Length: 190
Image 1: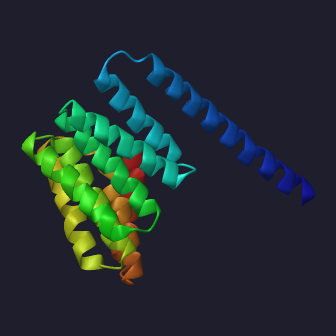
Image 2 (image 1 turned 90 degrees about the vertical axis):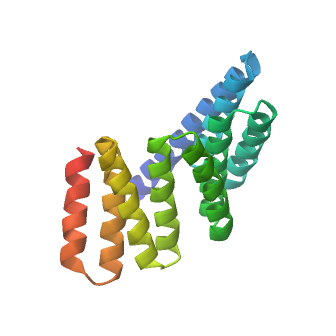
């Protein structure tokens, strides 16, 4: 049993060291980036990495990316920055702020007609409603995300929606539907 805990601690420390190396590497890329669009992209990547370990730093980095994206008026990167802010707020259990920020992201993605990110926004909002135990709204939004993905041949992005639907159906006690959704998730995730 002692060996198990020692291996577990070593694994966790190794993961943390690897994550820190990746973040350090991204900061080096940021320092050497010539174009502001590259800097915004890198800041959002750093935020994404921080979402694995430090939600406050993820938020801080995404807010920096947002400010820079606004300075250069890059709509797609503004929307992506709002998305990462929403992810950080979600991880910090600030669901109302997560919804506000993903709503801003969604509005921009709709203006620029980015179907993939529109569907991802609906998928994320569905997960926020699930976390708030608003299951009917979560189902509605997951289905909306699925429909956008199907209409636009984005079928490689469907698995998260079925995972969410399976979790919701399980919470509702609808076990047959939960198993059906989870089986679809597994099939698509391969």
